[in-house]
Image (tube, rainbow, N blue to C red; front, side, top):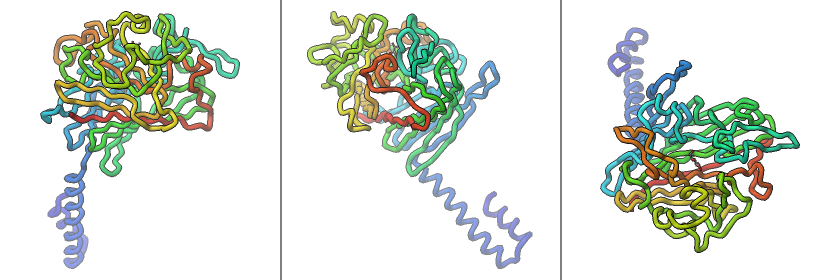
Length: 393
Ligand code: BGC
């Protein structure tokens, strides 16, 4: 209601004197609202994105700050469908691989932008045992289980709640995974909160509780290409990973159980190094992963939230820094992209046109007694945080 209408309304019900007060106070309300809008540093806007064949309505939320960063998140899979950040000339451009329709996201694809759960990465032969009881998961990455199963958390519909606090805007997503859904025990209530601040940082906070002992390892599966030119491979990106050790894998990408030193191997990213520099080197681990598809053992695990990894593209000047409280990070160089998936504006995503930096526990932890535990008990709160911080240099 504008001020004039409110004043007329006031006239019909109160005396002239009180109407005067009413008008004044309404004016104040309106000024405050306009002021609040003008100072809303990070905005969040909802729009309809599509409808699944089952009739579920999918929404998209755009979080936008005043520094040129924009993130679009859809309630299907909690997928980051778009992420725009400025280059060194101040031009905001797309930096994540994605599609332009819900229909395309619903077709099989390698987890573009999606939330991954209940267990990120592989569980050997899809089996694990808790308190003497063996649980069997679907084998969706022969002979192993990958990323929580065929539907996992990436092909389900999340409910969403918007929140504002200070200079930030958040989207809090919720999903309840039922007991034995995808084979995992316990009803698991999961919250994932995406928060954009005005410092070009996107925080992802994962929370979960269970009513039965289970395993949990949640992560985010965005494929980045900081050049914004998705026809180019990411081989020129300079990667840094703050890790002295690697989780080596055998032929089916299941950890051998040992942790090895990265010194003098293609896996030493302690100083910035181009992805392409050693990716074709003769190396058993590179052969097993068809390139980089490994979990690094992050340093300073006792320090909680800390620097984990970065990626820099000199052409655009974009720098992405990843901070986390997780023990590991999976650096995946997009080796399985094969030119079959459509880009947003024509063309297809070729091999290695995107990379992932998935903060998480080590693969197959439920079967590896020496790895940090991924078990969650009733009464415990699973809570982890990862930040993706963008800048230019
Ligand atoms: C895994 C890869 C897999 C990719 C897409 C990554 O997290 O490490 O092996 O191919 O996800 O499924």
